[in-house]
Length: 109
Image 1 (cartoon, rainbow, N blue to C red):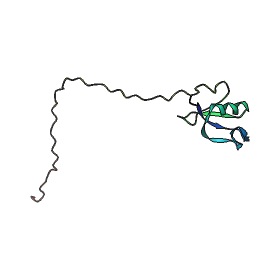
Image 2 (spheres, rainbow, N blue to C red; image 1 turned 120 degrees about the horizontal axis):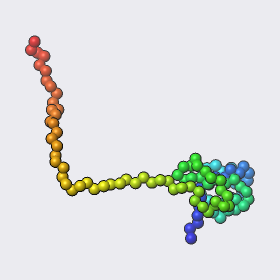
Image 3 (cartoon, rainbow, N blue to C red; image 1 turned 90 degrees about the horizontal axis):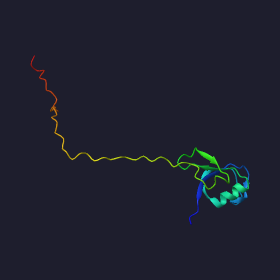
């Protein structure tokens, strides 16, 4: 079974032994498996889940919301293509336009 990972930051400003003794805070978002997140939450660390689609949006993680989807999926745009009727439209007449520049003869005066 694949591990569930969440994109998180840690705002605790102290040594974090649950992550090998690194110094917090860790403000660059990174993915962490749920089992390590559970250990961090049990130790009362300030862990925030970051929305992968909008990194300015965050939710403080708790044991209650650890295994839930805290962000709605990003709306996907769908392009609808419809078939045109098989009936051919009557061609419309388009006035012709001359692309030649007019030549004025200024020598006759």
